[in-house]
Amino acid sequence: LDLEADLRRAINNRDFVPYYQPIVRLSDGAVMGYEALLRWQHERRGLLLPSAFLDLGEESGLIEQVDWLLYEDVIGQLAQGGEGYLSVNVSPRHFRSPDFTPRLFGLIEAAGADPRRLRLEITEVALLDDGPRTLRVLQTLRERGVLVQLDDFGTGFSALSYLHRFPISTLKIDQSFIAGLHGRDLQSTYALVQGVLSLARTLGIETVGEGIENAAQRQTLLQLGCDYGQGYLLGRPAPMDAFVTG
Ligand code: G
Ligand code: G
Ligand code: MN
Ligand code: NA
Image (tube, rainbow, N blue to C red; front, side, top):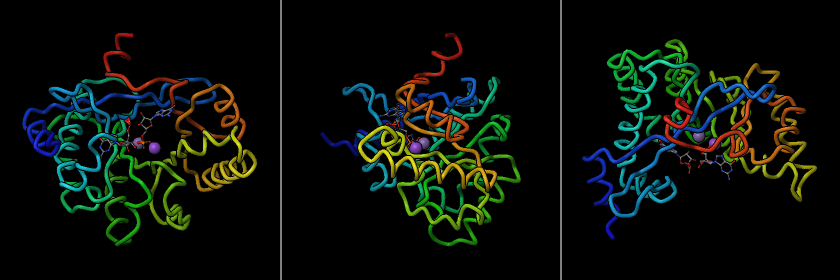
């Protein structure tokens, strides 16, 4: 009943696992990397998705501890070798905390992982305030090889000015736009996605279409010049074993 008490206990027991979802090149289907998605193996309720506990985690501040457990797992996975990148989600408040980058590089070094194979996913909210400090953090990450991707792009403030102010490697176009490509608001959504993709190309920023569920969406994105894709059509989130051992 008391989910917060459960969450505290789960942190002590490390009851969290990363599920991985492939991110593929749309032109030929090659897997470029995986996004790590948090799962809680709850002792009574089974495998919980972030939607079941993310709000609680944010409000209680416990999500940062959960995130560090997950980042440790993911960075450990990187250190085992393999190819391509692994990306992790970082909540805005966490991203803005001063000890975030030192602690992240501490983990990377301790594990002996290659920072160039780790990526961070942040949302537009993380870029909102304290521009100079955010810029320094992003520059440090970039210098040390950790690329930063903008997640759920288009759902936030979408102040396009930050795209050339901040070193962002990738725009991940939110799945609501992909769903809309063949939906009722076809024309406006199509134009919007087209505009974002063309802007990204101009700025030298790579693009990922999220939530691709059917071949029509994949084809439209490919035609519009979207570089990469993620979604149930291309691969569902699963434990890493499912990908390495087939
Ligand atoms: O698989 P899906 O239900 O897994 O993820 C839902 C949301 O939870 C995503 O929008 C993502 O931003 C967030 N999320 C997934 N994994 C993590 C994580 O490790 N840490 C944080 N803070 N958020 C995550
Ligand atoms: O916000 P973020 O993009 O980090 O989280 C991705 C979320 O989208 C996860 O919850 C993941 O499980 C979910 N997801 C991934 N692919 C698809 C898809 O093709 N369709 C839908 N509806 N959700 C997806
Ligand atoms: Mn994400
Ligand atoms: Na996203």
